[in-house]
Length: 187
Image 1 (tube, rainbow, N blue to C red):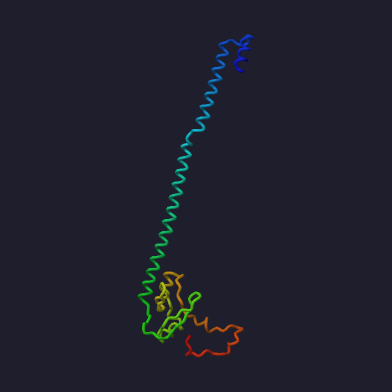
Image 2: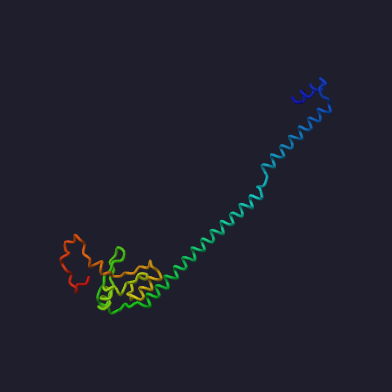
């Protein structure tokens, strides 16, 4: 149809043949350029500055993640070394007697544990001058000096210490408050 309109305009004398050819060539040129530009836009590589920025941001995030992982690893290593030093100190200063015959019961979590002690150790435990320290699945008797060292090294370390005020203070509504427990009774 474009040829018929072109021909009609040429026949009417409105335009000359050179102008018609020039207009058709410019239209083809514009169409070709627009096709080239749309093809470039579709296949154009991403903006190199944004790729560099994304790469730099990814690198900084990776460095931050690595620092955090290293910090956590170092903390875990320090905790492990502290635990090993405390276990060694407790084991080296333990006063457990293999010939002890008096059972001393204490509560650990939901369980009642039993540790055999001598009469002197039992009195010291009741007086609060000795404590029971768990290391792994074993329990060791330690003296007050070692107990203080362990508490300074790690305040969260569990130590089982008998406190006299806990057992001797009767509750206000205790129906057995008037009955004394004999001193020679051991539980």
